[in-house]
Image (cartoon, rainbow, N blue to C red; front, side):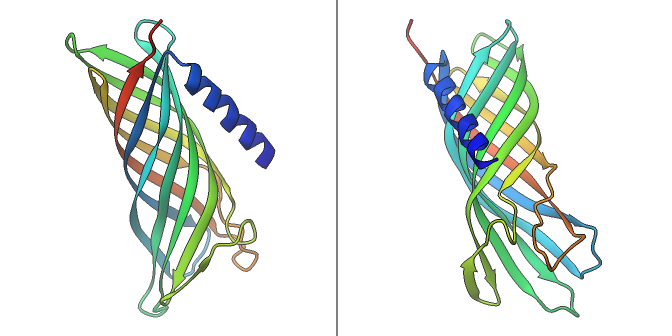
Length: 204
């Protein structure tokens, strides 16, 4: 699985390099987890991180586009216990994300277009840190947390000349729990991205 992921990364990198339209993208990532399958008295709050990377856009038809990219994303969650549990901790992880979107554009003016988009995403955890009762330690992969995440992303935005403003929400479908002492628990990711991109067009 790890080798397959790196093959996909290399393939998308080549696509970005040779795309007619490519750009740089960055912004805020507001992430959290959805926890089910357990009666443990825990909940979580959102963690505010960031994302940055290179993106590419391919015109399939006049209004239909395919876009992708390689993004470094800092995401996680802030854990909380009930009053009985009395626990507080945080998990913060560094991911490499690969969005694969189809986008449909609506022309607003000569310089402005709005778009709707959606498609699958892959994400691979590079590293992570958990802080528990003031003590920080590295997250173990895969004995505690699975590296590979995947799901569906949906979003919308506006393109003003070379600038693109976008909003995206990614619904994680993978169960990230790999803790042998917490069997039955299902942990899925959720990430809201607010982005700004600048697009370059290659000269022919």
